[in-house]
Length: 78
Length: 78
Image (tube, rainbow over all chains, first blue to last red):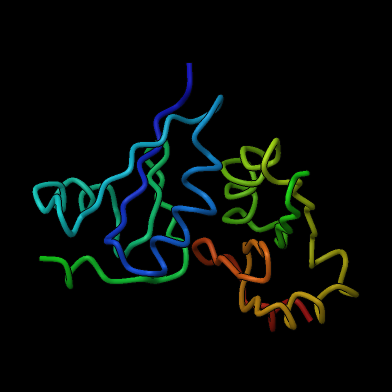
């Protein structure tokens, strides 16, 4: 079964680019990628923060956080 | 044909982890991933720097650089 990966973003250009290059390419046999727009879904900011996400875009896979470049800090999305 | 992606790393734990989570999962139908260990292959440091790589681990895909977390600055590998 594919492992769950969550891609957090906020619609910024850095985020959209990372989504196109990574999130879509990773979604497949190995990972099932859930895409969460924290700008529109602010209810999930707490969950992202608890997982260790400091900025977007970022992936959370198996409890580990992978920040890819820098689009926006989470604090800017509250 | 698969697009070329280069994964630059330096054997650090952050690098190895990113390689296991991303480089291997990305290598497939969409990308052909080349893995370059800049600690062992210092001749390619110039190429990485010219592509805009500041730290490892990082991907270069289609001229764009994606820094994933932070393992080591390129300057530490010279």
